[in-house]
Length: 185
Image 1 (tube, rainbow, N blue to C red):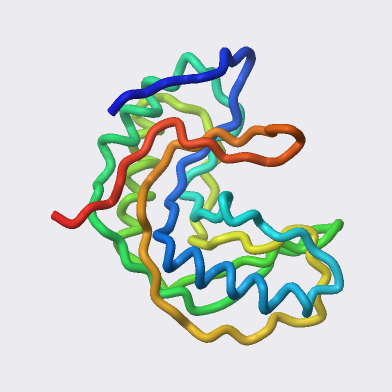
Image 2: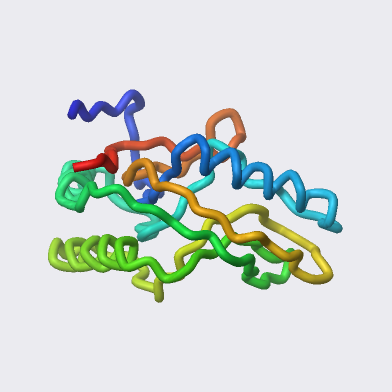
């Protein structure tokens, strides 16, 4: 794989590892967002290009560590992952909650996430190692009386990425810096 940085970065970069989804799964998640939008008193929808499942948030990191982060990406398993999305949840915050889509326990995700954390720690990377809660953020700054019901559905992860979180023309953008596509063996 060719790794290329198209912009000269200075200072630190806000980065994280994430799973992204195939088109069918993205379409289903967007349909869920569409159906819930009218129920919200307020809230900001996650752009379809930013829908993902965070495996590990590294925060601000030195760009000189990118080759190491990239290498860790390629060392992780690339087996297909099927996901069963089963429920909604929210993280309550003062300015409004984060509304998220949750899933059944998935040993494949748990294994990859544990391997990732182990690799990061073994490499001496400093990051916030908070308890893992597999979810996809649907909306931010939400005001909602109660969580609506959700019909469970199956979806597929498409790739594992090292992502750069940054602003492009004042729009939050997640740019893949390294990718490990999940393929049938």
